[in-house]
Length: 533
Ligand code: FDA
Image (cartoon, rainbow, N blue to C red; front, side, top):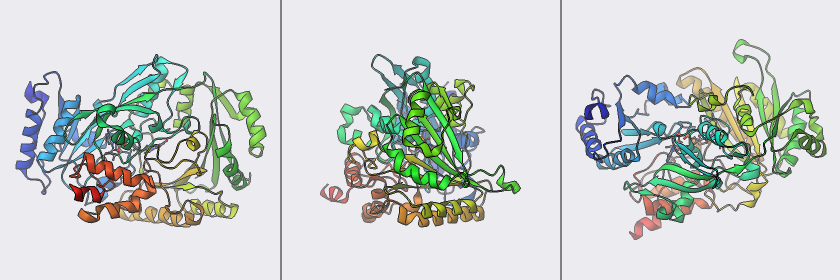
Protein backbone atom coordinates (compact mmCIF):
# COMPACT_ATOMS: atom_id res chain seq x y z
CA UNK A 1 0.00 0.00 0.00
CA UNK A 2 2.78 2.33 0.96
CA UNK A 3 4.46 1.89 -2.38
CA UNK A 4 1.19 2.78 -4.09
CA UNK A 5 0.71 5.70 -1.81
CA UNK A 6 4.16 7.11 -2.44
CA UNK A 7 4.77 6.74 -6.13
CA UNK A 8 8.42 7.75 -6.26
CA UNK A 9 10.31 6.95 -9.38
CA UNK A 10 13.99 7.75 -9.52
CA UNK A 11 15.27 7.98 -13.04
CA UNK A 12 15.94 11.60 -13.81
CA UNK A 13 18.13 14.11 -12.09
CA UNK A 14 19.34 17.42 -13.34
CA UNK A 15 23.13 17.43 -13.11
CA UNK A 16 23.00 19.97 -10.33
CA UNK A 17 21.14 17.79 -7.84
CA UNK A 18 22.82 14.69 -6.53
CA UNK A 19 20.99 11.40 -6.41
CA UNK A 20 21.72 11.14 -2.73
CA UNK A 21 20.07 14.47 -1.96
CA UNK A 22 16.92 13.53 -3.77
CA UNK A 23 16.79 10.06 -2.26
CA UNK A 24 17.23 11.53 1.19
CA UNK A 25 14.56 14.08 0.42
CA UNK A 26 12.11 11.39 -0.55
CA UNK A 27 12.98 9.31 2.46
CA UNK A 28 12.27 12.36 4.56
CA UNK A 29 8.89 12.84 2.84
CA UNK A 30 8.01 9.17 3.38
CA UNK A 31 8.76 9.16 7.05
CA UNK A 32 7.39 12.53 8.10
CA UNK A 33 3.85 12.42 9.31
CA UNK A 34 3.63 8.74 8.32
CA UNK A 35 1.10 8.22 11.11
CA UNK A 36 -1.46 9.96 8.89
CA UNK A 37 -2.82 6.73 7.46
CA UNK A 38 -5.80 8.31 5.81
CA UNK A 39 -3.82 10.76 3.76
CA UNK A 40 -1.76 10.24 0.71
CA UNK A 41 -0.04 12.36 -1.82
CA UNK A 42 1.39 11.57 -5.15
CA UNK A 43 4.91 12.62 -5.87
CA UNK A 44 5.87 12.67 -9.53
CA UNK A 45 9.42 12.55 -10.74
CA UNK A 46 10.24 13.74 -14.21
CA UNK A 47 10.18 10.31 -15.82
CA UNK A 48 6.68 9.60 -14.62
CA UNK A 49 4.25 9.62 -17.52
CA UNK A 50 2.03 12.11 -15.69
CA UNK A 51 4.85 14.58 -15.05
CA UNK A 52 4.78 16.60 -18.31
CA UNK A 53 1.02 16.90 -18.28
CA UNK A 54 0.94 17.87 -14.63
CA UNK A 55 3.72 20.42 -15.05
CA UNK A 56 1.99 22.10 -17.96
CA UNK A 57 -1.60 21.63 -16.80
CA UNK A 58 -2.13 25.03 -15.20
CA UNK A 59 0.90 26.82 -16.58
CA UNK A 60 -0.52 29.95 -18.14
CA UNK A 61 2.52 31.35 -19.87
CA UNK A 62 4.68 28.67 -21.55
CA UNK A 63 7.42 31.18 -22.41
CA UNK A 64 10.10 29.40 -20.39
CA UNK A 65 9.34 25.79 -21.20
CA UNK A 66 11.49 25.41 -24.26
CA UNK A 67 13.36 28.62 -24.63
CA UNK A 68 15.18 29.26 -21.39
CA UNK A 69 18.24 27.27 -20.45
CA UNK A 70 18.57 29.00 -17.13
CA UNK A 71 15.23 27.72 -15.88
CA UNK A 72 15.07 24.29 -14.35
CA UNK A 73 12.07 22.03 -14.18
CA UNK A 74 11.06 20.74 -10.77
CA UNK A 75 12.88 17.65 -9.50
CA UNK A 76 9.56 16.44 -8.18
CA UNK A 77 5.99 17.60 -8.29
CA UNK A 78 4.06 16.98 -5.09
CA UNK A 79 0.27 17.20 -5.21
CA UNK A 80 -0.85 16.87 -1.59
CA UNK A 81 -4.31 15.84 -0.55
CA UNK A 82 -3.58 16.81 3.01
CA UNK A 83 -1.82 19.72 4.64
CA UNK A 84 0.58 17.42 6.50
CA UNK A 85 2.35 16.70 3.24
CA UNK A 86 2.89 20.39 2.62
CA UNK A 87 4.42 20.59 6.07
CA UNK A 88 6.63 17.64 5.15
CA UNK A 89 7.60 19.21 1.81
CA UNK A 90 8.65 22.45 3.53
CA UNK A 91 10.67 20.73 6.23
CA UNK A 92 12.30 18.23 3.88
CA UNK A 93 13.26 20.79 1.22
CA UNK A 94 14.78 22.94 3.95
CA UNK A 95 16.69 20.05 5.42
CA UNK A 96 18.11 19.00 2.05
CA UNK A 97 19.04 22.42 0.76
CA UNK A 98 16.44 22.42 -2.00
CA UNK A 99 14.06 25.20 -2.91
CA UNK A 100 10.33 25.02 -3.00
CA UNK A 101 7.81 26.58 -5.36
CA UNK A 102 4.09 26.59 -4.62
CA UNK A 103 1.47 26.73 -7.32
CA UNK A 104 -2.25 27.27 -6.95
CA UNK A 105 -3.64 28.21 -10.38
CA UNK A 106 -0.36 28.63 -12.30
CA UNK A 107 -1.26 32.06 -13.71
CA UNK A 108 1.84 33.87 -12.52
CA UNK A 109 2.81 36.22 -15.38
CA UNK A 110 6.49 35.35 -15.05
CA UNK A 111 6.00 31.68 -14.27
CA UNK A 112 7.56 31.93 -10.80
CA UNK A 113 5.25 29.30 -9.37
CA UNK A 114 6.71 26.56 -11.55
CA UNK A 115 10.21 27.58 -12.59
CA UNK A 116 13.37 28.23 -10.64
CA UNK A 117 17.07 28.62 -11.31
CA UNK A 118 18.21 26.18 -8.64
CA UNK A 119 17.00 22.62 -7.89
CA UNK A 120 13.50 22.72 -6.49
CA UNK A 121 10.36 20.84 -5.55
CA UNK A 122 7.02 22.02 -6.87
CA UNK A 123 4.06 21.77 -4.51
CA UNK A 124 0.95 21.97 -6.64
CA UNK A 125 -2.21 22.60 -4.62
CA UNK A 126 -4.58 21.28 -7.29
CA UNK A 127 -6.01 18.71 -4.87
CA UNK A 128 -6.65 21.20 -2.10
CA UNK A 129 -9.56 23.12 -3.52
CA UNK A 130 -12.62 22.76 -1.36
CA UNK A 131 -15.07 25.65 -0.95
CA UNK A 132 -17.35 25.70 2.13
CA UNK A 133 -20.08 28.29 2.09
CA UNK A 134 -21.81 29.42 5.28
CA UNK A 135 -24.77 31.54 4.25
CA UNK A 136 -25.83 32.26 7.79
CA UNK A 137 -22.51 33.90 8.45
CA UNK A 138 -22.34 35.19 4.85
CA UNK A 139 -18.81 33.82 4.67
CA UNK A 140 -16.88 30.97 3.10
CA UNK A 141 -13.65 29.01 3.58
CA UNK A 142 -11.88 28.43 0.29
CA UNK A 143 -8.69 26.45 -0.17
CA UNK A 144 -5.86 28.00 -2.14
CA UNK A 145 -5.89 25.37 -4.88
CA UNK A 146 -9.44 26.27 -5.92
CA UNK A 147 -9.92 28.55 -8.91
CA UNK A 148 -12.01 31.71 -9.05
CA UNK A 149 -14.45 29.78 -11.26
CA UNK A 150 -14.84 27.08 -8.61
CA UNK A 151 -15.43 29.71 -5.96
CA UNK A 152 -18.02 31.65 -8.00
CA UNK A 153 -19.76 28.40 -8.98
CA UNK A 154 -19.98 27.21 -5.37
CA UNK A 155 -21.43 30.52 -4.21
CA UNK A 156 -24.01 30.55 -7.01
CA UNK A 157 -25.10 27.00 -6.18
CA UNK A 158 -25.98 28.15 -2.67
CA UNK A 159 -27.36 31.63 -3.23
CA UNK A 160 -28.69 33.93 -5.92
CA UNK A 161 -27.96 37.04 -3.90
CA UNK A 162 -24.35 36.51 -2.91
CA UNK A 163 -21.13 36.88 -4.83
CA UNK A 164 -17.47 37.68 -4.33
CA UNK A 165 -15.39 40.57 -5.68
CA UNK A 166 -12.37 39.00 -7.38
CA UNK A 167 -10.85 38.65 -10.85
CA UNK A 168 -12.44 37.96 -14.20
CA UNK A 169 -10.65 34.88 -15.52
CA UNK A 170 -12.19 31.72 -13.95
CA UNK A 171 -9.04 29.58 -14.13
CA UNK A 172 -6.98 31.96 -11.96
CA UNK A 173 -6.01 30.29 -8.67
CA UNK A 174 -7.17 31.57 -5.29
CA UNK A 175 -3.71 31.19 -3.71
CA UNK A 176 -1.82 33.55 -6.00
CA UNK A 177 -4.74 35.88 -6.66
CA UNK A 178 -5.71 36.67 -3.06
CA UNK A 179 -2.10 36.97 -1.96
CA UNK A 180 -1.49 39.60 -4.65
CA UNK A 181 -4.68 41.66 -4.11
CA UNK A 182 -7.14 40.51 -6.78
CA UNK A 183 -9.66 42.72 -8.52
CA UNK A 184 -12.52 42.39 -10.97
CA UNK A 185 -15.86 43.85 -11.93
CA UNK A 186 -17.01 44.59 -8.37
CA UNK A 187 -13.89 46.41 -7.16
CA UNK A 188 -15.57 49.84 -7.20
CA UNK A 189 -18.32 48.53 -4.92
CA UNK A 190 -16.45 46.08 -2.69
CA UNK A 191 -12.71 46.59 -3.18
CA UNK A 192 -10.17 43.83 -3.74
CA UNK A 193 -10.53 40.14 -3.02
CA UNK A 194 -7.89 40.67 -0.30
CA UNK A 195 -10.03 43.42 1.29
CA UNK A 196 -12.68 40.78 1.90
CA UNK A 197 -10.47 38.15 3.56
CA UNK A 198 -11.19 37.77 7.26
CA UNK A 199 -9.07 34.79 8.29
CA UNK A 200 -6.58 32.35 6.78
CA UNK A 201 -4.56 29.22 7.49
CA UNK A 202 -0.90 29.33 6.61
CA UNK A 203 1.99 26.88 6.98
CA UNK A 204 5.10 28.75 8.00
CA UNK A 205 8.74 27.87 7.28
CA UNK A 206 8.85 25.77 10.42
CA UNK A 207 5.92 23.69 9.27
CA UNK A 208 3.49 25.16 11.79
CA UNK A 209 -0.13 25.70 10.81
CA UNK A 210 -1.27 29.15 11.89
CA UNK A 211 -4.61 30.90 11.65
CA UNK A 212 -5.13 34.64 11.98
CA UNK A 213 -5.00 34.59 15.75
CA UNK A 214 -1.85 32.49 15.87
CA UNK A 215 0.01 34.25 13.08
CA UNK A 216 -0.69 37.73 14.46
CA UNK A 217 -2.02 40.82 12.73
CA UNK A 218 1.25 41.79 11.03
CA UNK A 219 1.59 38.51 9.17
CA UNK A 220 -2.12 38.41 8.44
CA UNK A 221 -1.75 41.90 6.96
CA UNK A 222 1.25 40.84 4.87
CA UNK A 223 -0.35 37.82 3.21
CA UNK A 224 -3.30 39.86 1.94
CA UNK A 225 -1.59 41.27 -1.11
CA UNK A 226 2.01 41.51 0.02
CA UNK A 227 4.35 39.35 -1.95
CA UNK A 228 3.10 35.97 -2.83
CA UNK A 229 5.05 32.97 -1.56
CA UNK A 230 7.25 35.12 0.70
CA UNK A 231 5.77 34.35 4.11
CA UNK A 232 4.47 30.80 4.05
CA UNK A 233 2.18 28.55 2.07
CA UNK A 234 -1.37 29.69 2.50
CA UNK A 235 -3.72 26.75 2.77
CA UNK A 236 -7.10 28.42 2.91
CA UNK A 237 -8.85 31.73 3.26
CA UNK A 238 -11.99 32.78 5.07
CA UNK A 239 -13.82 35.35 2.99
CA UNK A 240 -16.75 37.65 3.52
CA UNK A 241 -19.36 37.10 0.82
CA UNK A 242 -20.98 40.22 -0.60
CA UNK A 243 -24.62 40.83 -1.50
CA UNK A 244 -25.45 41.05 -5.19
CA UNK A 245 -28.84 41.95 -6.71
CA UNK A 246 -30.88 39.18 -8.35
CA UNK A 247 -30.61 41.08 -11.63
CA UNK A 248 -27.53 42.82 -12.96
CA UNK A 249 -26.98 44.36 -16.39
CA UNK A 250 -24.01 44.02 -18.71
CA UNK A 251 -22.99 45.64 -21.95
CA UNK A 252 -20.12 45.72 -24.40
CA UNK A 253 -20.03 48.68 -26.76
CA UNK A 254 -17.21 48.76 -29.30
CA UNK A 255 -16.22 52.00 -30.99
CA UNK A 256 -13.85 52.40 -33.91
CA UNK A 257 -11.58 55.32 -34.62
CA UNK A 258 -14.19 56.66 -37.03
CA UNK A 259 -16.84 56.39 -34.31
CA UNK A 260 -14.77 58.59 -32.05
CA UNK A 261 -13.03 55.91 -29.98
CA UNK A 262 -10.18 58.18 -28.91
CA UNK A 263 -12.46 61.04 -27.87
CA UNK A 264 -14.64 58.56 -25.95
CA UNK A 265 -11.72 57.03 -24.06
CA UNK A 266 -10.53 60.53 -23.32
CA UNK A 267 -13.93 61.44 -21.87
CA UNK A 268 -14.16 58.08 -20.00
CA UNK A 269 -11.09 59.08 -18.01
CA UNK A 270 -13.00 61.95 -16.41
CA UNK A 271 -16.10 59.91 -15.67
CA UNK A 272 -15.46 56.25 -14.90
CA UNK A 273 -13.86 56.65 -11.45
CA UNK A 274 -16.59 59.02 -10.30
CA UNK A 275 -19.61 56.99 -11.32
CA UNK A 276 -21.77 55.44 -8.60
CA UNK A 277 -19.95 52.38 -7.29
CA UNK A 278 -22.58 49.99 -8.70
CA UNK A 279 -21.32 50.81 -12.18
CA UNK A 280 -18.04 49.46 -13.51
CA UNK A 281 -17.03 50.31 -17.07
CA UNK A 282 -13.63 49.08 -18.17
CA UNK A 283 -12.14 49.65 -21.60
CA UNK A 284 -10.19 47.20 -23.70
CA UNK A 285 -8.27 48.86 -26.49
CA UNK A 286 -7.33 46.23 -29.02
CA UNK A 287 -6.77 45.27 -32.60
CA UNK A 288 -9.91 43.66 -33.93
CA UNK A 289 -8.60 42.29 -37.22
CA UNK A 290 -10.26 38.89 -37.74
CA UNK A 291 -7.04 37.11 -38.24
CA UNK A 292 -3.96 39.28 -38.23
CA UNK A 293 -1.81 36.33 -39.28
CA UNK A 294 -3.75 36.03 -42.51
CA UNK A 295 -3.32 39.66 -43.36
CA UNK A 296 -6.81 41.02 -42.65
CA UNK A 297 -6.99 44.76 -42.19
CA UNK A 298 -5.88 45.95 -38.77
CA UNK A 299 -8.06 48.34 -36.83
CA UNK A 300 -7.76 49.24 -33.18
CA UNK A 301 -11.05 49.69 -31.36
CA UNK A 302 -12.11 50.68 -27.86
CA UNK A 303 -14.43 48.19 -26.25
CA UNK A 304 -16.44 49.56 -23.31
CA UNK A 305 -17.22 46.54 -21.19
CA UNK A 306 -19.48 47.02 -18.21
CA UNK A 307 -21.19 45.45 -15.20
CA UNK A 308 -24.00 47.35 -13.50
CA UNK A 309 -25.28 45.99 -10.19
CA UNK A 310 -28.89 46.79 -10.98
CA UNK A 311 -31.54 46.74 -13.67
CA UNK A 312 -31.46 48.07 -17.20
CA UNK A 313 -33.73 51.09 -16.57
CA UNK A 314 -31.49 52.47 -13.85
CA UNK A 315 -28.40 51.81 -15.96
CA UNK A 316 -29.85 53.70 -18.93
CA UNK A 317 -30.77 56.65 -16.75
CA UNK A 318 -27.25 56.77 -15.35
CA UNK A 319 -25.58 56.43 -18.73
CA UNK A 320 -27.75 59.14 -20.25
CA UNK A 321 -26.87 61.49 -17.43
CA UNK A 322 -23.21 60.70 -16.95
CA UNK A 323 -21.85 59.32 -20.21
CA UNK A 324 -24.28 60.27 -23.01
CA UNK A 325 -21.36 60.56 -25.47
CA UNK A 326 -21.13 56.76 -25.62
CA UNK A 327 -24.60 56.64 -27.16
CA UNK A 328 -25.54 53.45 -25.34
CA UNK A 329 -28.88 51.92 -26.34
CA UNK A 330 -31.04 49.60 -24.27
CA UNK A 331 -30.57 46.98 -26.98
CA UNK A 332 -26.81 46.93 -26.33
CA UNK A 333 -27.44 45.73 -22.79
CA UNK A 334 -28.54 42.43 -21.25
CA UNK A 335 -30.08 41.73 -17.87
CA UNK A 336 -28.90 38.56 -16.18
CA UNK A 337 -27.96 37.06 -12.83
CA UNK A 338 -24.60 37.90 -11.25
CA UNK A 339 -23.23 34.42 -11.98
CA UNK A 340 -24.24 34.76 -15.63
CA UNK A 341 -22.31 38.00 -15.70
CA UNK A 342 -19.27 36.02 -14.51
CA UNK A 343 -19.64 33.80 -17.59
CA UNK A 344 -20.18 36.87 -19.76
CA UNK A 345 -16.97 38.56 -18.64
CA UNK A 346 -15.05 35.32 -19.00
CA UNK A 347 -16.10 35.17 -22.64
CA UNK A 348 -18.71 32.42 -22.35
CA UNK A 349 -22.22 32.65 -23.73
CA UNK A 350 -25.15 33.33 -21.42
CA UNK A 351 -26.58 29.86 -22.02
CA UNK A 352 -23.34 27.97 -21.36
CA UNK A 353 -23.85 25.71 -18.35
CA UNK A 354 -22.42 27.06 -15.13
CA UNK A 355 -20.20 23.98 -15.00
CA UNK A 356 -17.82 25.60 -17.51
CA UNK A 357 -16.60 27.56 -14.52
CA UNK A 358 -15.21 24.33 -13.09
CA UNK A 359 -12.95 23.79 -16.07
CA UNK A 360 -9.46 24.42 -14.78
CA UNK A 361 -8.00 24.50 -18.26
CA UNK A 362 -7.11 28.02 -19.00
CA UNK A 363 -8.95 29.77 -21.79
CA UNK A 364 -6.19 32.10 -22.81
CA UNK A 365 -2.97 30.09 -22.69
CA UNK A 366 -0.26 31.62 -24.88
CA UNK A 367 3.18 33.16 -24.83
CA UNK A 368 2.74 36.62 -23.41
CA UNK A 369 4.31 39.54 -21.63
CA UNK A 370 2.41 42.16 -19.67
CA UNK A 371 3.21 45.35 -17.82
CA UNK A 372 1.08 47.65 -15.71
CA UNK A 373 0.69 51.26 -14.64
CA UNK A 374 -1.56 53.45 -12.56
CA UNK A 375 -2.94 56.59 -14.15
CA UNK A 376 -3.65 59.62 -11.97
CA UNK A 377 -4.32 62.35 -14.54
CA UNK A 378 -6.32 61.93 -17.74
CA UNK A 379 -4.10 61.23 -20.73
CA UNK A 380 -4.57 63.90 -23.43
CA UNK A 381 -6.01 62.85 -26.78
CA UNK A 382 -2.64 63.18 -28.45
CA UNK A 383 -1.23 60.70 -25.94
CA UNK A 384 -4.05 58.24 -26.60
CA UNK A 385 -3.45 58.56 -30.31
CA UNK A 386 0.14 57.40 -29.77
CA UNK A 387 -1.16 54.29 -27.97
CA UNK A 388 -3.40 53.53 -30.93
CA UNK A 389 -0.46 53.83 -33.33
CA UNK A 390 1.67 51.50 -31.25
CA UNK A 391 -1.04 48.86 -30.88
CA UNK A 392 -1.26 48.74 -34.66
CA UNK A 393 2.38 47.62 -34.84
CA UNK A 394 1.73 44.29 -33.09
CA UNK A 395 -0.25 41.24 -34.11
CA UNK A 396 -1.99 40.45 -30.82
CA UNK A 397 -1.73 43.28 -28.35
CA UNK A 398 -4.11 45.14 -26.15
CA UNK A 399 -4.47 47.51 -23.27
CA UNK A 400 -7.03 46.97 -20.52
CA UNK A 401 -7.99 49.92 -18.36
CA UNK A 402 -9.92 49.26 -15.15
CA UNK A 403 -11.53 52.22 -13.37
CA UNK A 404 -10.86 52.76 -9.66
CA UNK A 405 -12.70 55.14 -7.32
CA UNK A 406 -15.68 54.11 -5.23
CA UNK A 407 -14.73 51.71 -2.42
CA UNK A 408 -11.06 51.90 -3.48
CA UNK A 409 -11.02 55.54 -2.39
CA UNK A 410 -12.30 54.70 1.07
CA UNK A 411 -9.49 52.30 2.02
CA UNK A 412 -6.21 53.78 3.19
CA UNK A 413 -2.92 53.04 1.40
CA UNK A 414 -1.59 51.16 4.41
CA UNK A 415 -4.69 49.14 5.28
CA UNK A 416 -3.23 46.27 3.23
CA UNK A 417 0.08 45.92 1.36
CA UNK A 418 -1.73 46.87 -1.88
CA UNK A 419 -1.36 50.69 -1.76
CA UNK A 420 -3.01 51.85 -5.01
CA UNK A 421 -6.12 53.51 -3.64
CA UNK A 422 -7.36 57.13 -3.64
CA UNK A 423 -5.86 59.31 -6.33
CA UNK A 424 -5.74 56.65 -9.02
CA UNK A 425 -8.18 57.08 -11.89
CA UNK A 426 -7.49 53.67 -13.28
CA UNK A 427 -5.12 50.76 -13.64
CA UNK A 428 -3.65 50.17 -17.09
CA UNK A 429 -2.40 46.83 -18.25
CA UNK A 430 -0.51 46.34 -21.53
CA UNK A 431 -0.36 42.87 -22.99
CA UNK A 432 1.29 41.32 -25.99
CA UNK A 433 0.78 37.72 -27.04
CA UNK A 434 2.45 35.58 -29.63
CA UNK A 435 2.22 32.10 -31.02
CA UNK A 436 5.71 31.36 -32.24
CA UNK A 437 8.15 29.86 -29.77
CA UNK A 438 11.80 30.83 -29.57
CA UNK A 439 14.10 33.52 -28.28
CA UNK A 440 14.01 35.61 -31.43
CA UNK A 441 10.23 35.75 -31.54
CA UNK A 442 9.91 36.60 -27.90
CA UNK A 443 12.64 39.28 -28.06
CA UNK A 444 10.73 41.07 -30.79
CA UNK A 445 7.54 41.22 -28.72
CA UNK A 446 9.38 42.05 -25.51
CA UNK A 447 11.03 44.95 -27.29
CA UNK A 448 7.65 46.18 -28.48
CA UNK A 449 6.02 46.16 -25.06
CA UNK A 450 9.02 47.80 -23.41
CA UNK A 451 8.89 50.54 -26.03
CA UNK A 452 5.20 51.09 -25.33
CA UNK A 453 5.95 51.23 -21.61
CA UNK A 454 8.62 53.89 -22.21
CA UNK A 455 6.18 55.82 -24.33
CA UNK A 456 3.68 55.85 -21.44
CA UNK A 457 6.15 57.39 -18.95
CA UNK A 458 4.84 61.00 -19.04
CA UNK A 459 1.23 59.88 -18.64
CA UNK A 460 1.34 57.59 -15.63
CA UNK A 461 2.18 57.67 -11.92
CA UNK A 462 5.74 58.64 -11.04
CA UNK A 463 7.89 58.46 -7.88
CA UNK A 464 7.28 55.62 -7.79
CA UNK A 465 5.99 54.53 -11.13
CA UNK A 466 3.54 52.12 -9.56
CA UNK A 467 2.69 48.60 -10.72
CA UNK A 468 0.27 45.87 -9.70
CA UNK A 469 1.85 42.83 -8.08
CA UNK A 470 -0.58 40.37 -9.65
CA UNK A 471 0.59 41.57 -13.07
CA UNK A 472 4.08 40.51 -12.11
CA UNK A 473 6.83 42.10 -14.19
CA UNK A 474 10.44 41.05 -13.73
CA UNK A 475 11.58 44.03 -15.84
CA UNK A 476 10.97 46.12 -12.72
CA UNK A 477 13.90 44.43 -11.03
CA UNK A 478 14.89 41.24 -9.30
CA UNK A 479 16.40 40.45 -5.94
CA UNK A 480 20.09 40.60 -5.22
CA UNK A 481 21.95 38.45 -2.76
CA UNK A 482 23.11 38.92 0.82
CA UNK A 483 23.56 42.43 2.19
CA UNK A 484 22.33 44.18 -0.92
CA UNK A 485 19.10 42.20 -1.15
CA UNK A 486 16.91 44.79 0.56
CA UNK A 487 18.18 47.74 -1.45
CA UNK A 488 18.00 45.84 -4.74
CA UNK A 489 14.49 44.64 -3.93
CA UNK A 490 13.36 48.15 -3.00
CA UNK A 491 13.66 49.07 -6.67
CA UNK A 492 10.71 46.85 -7.57
CA UNK A 493 9.21 46.68 -4.08
CA UNK A 494 8.18 50.32 -3.80
CA UNK A 495 6.49 50.14 -7.18
CA UNK A 496 4.20 47.35 -6.02
CA UNK A 497 3.84 48.39 -2.37
CA UNK A 498 4.98 52.01 -1.98
CA UNK A 499 5.56 52.75 1.73
CA UNK A 500 4.28 49.32 2.72
CA UNK A 501 7.39 47.62 1.38
CA UNK A 502 9.45 48.33 4.50
CA UNK A 503 6.76 46.88 6.78
CA UNK A 504 6.59 43.77 4.59
CA UNK A 505 10.36 43.35 4.89
CA UNK A 506 10.12 43.68 8.67
CA UNK A 507 7.47 40.96 8.78
CA UNK A 508 9.61 38.79 6.51
CA UNK A 509 12.60 39.17 8.87
CA UNK A 510 10.45 37.96 11.73
CA UNK A 511 8.81 34.96 10.07
CA UNK A 512 11.51 33.74 7.66
CA UNK A 513 14.84 35.23 8.77
CA UNK A 514 16.85 32.71 6.72
CA UNK A 515 14.95 33.69 3.57
CA UNK A 516 14.00 30.10 2.79
CA UNK A 517 10.89 31.09 0.83
CA UNK A 518 12.30 33.10 -2.00
CA UNK A 519 12.06 33.83 -5.67
CA UNK A 520 13.18 36.60 -8.01
CA UNK A 521 10.66 39.00 -6.48
CA UNK A 522 10.08 37.70 -2.97
CA UNK A 523 10.16 40.08 -0.03
CA UNK A 524 13.64 40.28 1.57
CA UNK A 525 14.26 40.82 5.28
CA UNK A 526 14.66 44.33 6.54
CA UNK A 527 18.44 44.67 7.15
CA UNK A 528 18.38 46.49 10.49
CA UNK A 529 16.41 43.67 12.01
CA UNK A 530 18.76 41.03 10.66
CA UNK A 531 21.78 42.74 12.21
CA UNK A 532 20.15 43.01 15.62
CA UNK A 533 19.72 39.22 15.82
P1 FDA B 1 0.27 30.84 -9.38
O1 FDA B 1 -0.09 29.53 -8.87
O2 FDA B 1 1.15 30.92 -10.58
O3 FDA B 1 0.88 31.70 -8.20
C1 FDA B 1 1.28 33.05 -8.33
C2 FDA B 1 2.28 33.40 -7.24
O4 FDA B 1 1.69 33.18 -5.97
C3 FDA B 1 3.53 32.54 -7.26
O5 FDA B 1 4.61 33.29 -6.76
C4 FDA B 1 3.19 31.43 -6.30
O6 FDA B 1 4.32 30.77 -5.77
C5 FDA B 1 2.39 32.16 -5.25
N1 FDA B 1 1.41 31.30 -4.61
C6 FDA B 1 0.46 30.56 -5.23
N2 FDA B 1 -0.27 29.91 -4.33
C7 FDA B 1 0.21 30.23 -3.13
C8 FDA B 1 -0.13 29.85 -1.80
N3 FDA B 1 -1.12 29.00 -1.57
N4 FDA B 1 0.58 30.35 -0.78
C9 FDA B 1 1.59 31.21 -1.02
N5 FDA B 1 1.97 31.61 -2.24
C10 FDA B 1 1.28 31.13 -3.29
N6 FDA B 1 -5.64 39.51 -11.68
C11 FDA B 1 -6.62 40.33 -11.23
O7 FDA B 1 -6.47 40.97 -10.19
N7 FDA B 1 -7.81 40.41 -11.90
C12 FDA B 1 -8.06 39.70 -13.03
O8 FDA B 1 -9.14 39.81 -13.60
C13 FDA B 1 -7.03 38.86 -13.52
N8 FDA B 1 -7.20 38.13 -14.66
C14 FDA B 1 -6.21 37.31 -15.13
C15 FDA B 1 -6.38 36.59 -16.31
C16 FDA B 1 -5.36 35.77 -16.79
C17 FDA B 1 -5.57 34.99 -18.05
C18 FDA B 1 -4.14 35.69 -16.08
C19 FDA B 1 -3.00 34.85 -16.57
C20 FDA B 1 -3.97 36.39 -14.91
C21 FDA B 1 -4.98 37.23 -14.43
N9 FDA B 1 -4.81 37.97 -13.26
C22 FDA B 1 -5.82 38.78 -12.82
C23 FDA B 1 -3.54 37.92 -12.52
C24 FDA B 1 -3.64 36.88 -11.40
O9 FDA B 1 -4.38 37.43 -10.34
C25 FDA B 1 -2.24 36.53 -10.89
O10 FDA B 1 -1.46 36.03 -11.92
C26 FDA B 1 -2.33 35.53 -9.73
O11 FDA B 1 -1.17 35.56 -8.98
C27 FDA B 1 -2.56 34.14 -10.22
O12 FDA B 1 -2.74 33.27 -9.15
P2 FDA B 1 -2.51 31.71 -9.38
O13 FDA B 1 -2.73 31.02 -8.11
O14 FDA B 1 -3.29 31.29 -10.57
O15 FDA B 1 -1.00 31.71 -9.81
